[in-house]
Every structure is written in C-alpha cells, then in structure tokens.
Image 1 (tube, rainbow, N blue to C red):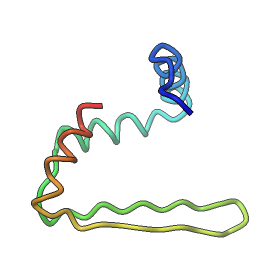
Image 2 (image 1 turned 90 degrees about the vertical axis):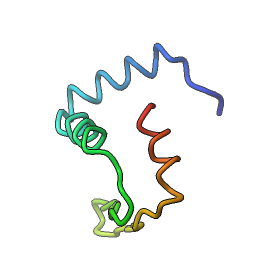
Image 3 (image 1 turned 120 degrees about the vertical axis):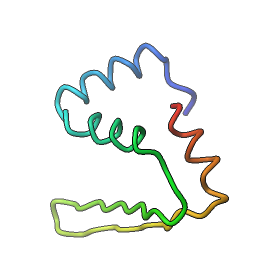
Image 4 (image 1 turned 180 degrees about the horizontal axis):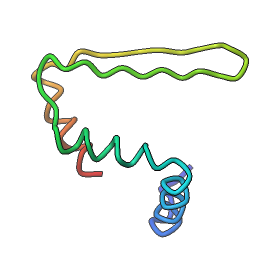
Length: 73
C-alpha cells in the first residue's frame, strides 16, 4: 500500500466531511485548542455486533512534539 494520490485523498475527505460534518468540526476544535501535558486522549470503536475496542493515553511532555506535527496534516 503506497502513498495515496493527494487529489483522490482530498476528494475522499470532502465526501466524508459532507456525510459526517461533526468530524471536521471536532478536528478543527481540537487543533485550535491545542495539546497540553496531562491531557487525556481516548478512542473507542464499537461494532454492530456489540464488540468494542478502547484505548487512551495521558499526554506527556515528550508527546507534544509529535502531536504538534500531526496537527499539520
């Protein structure tokens, strides 16, 4: 699996954003507020069959550089 075509990626993101408008707003809100030490990041995936996967981290000082880089994507 290589790097996706940037135009195809943009088109796919635009379609996704139109279908799920709360997601881009959520991402923008998080980017605007920023990241800080002690902040908790949690993710949960729930499947139609009821199974679920959860994980989370508490942001440490050494995580901040990576998180700032990710904001630029």
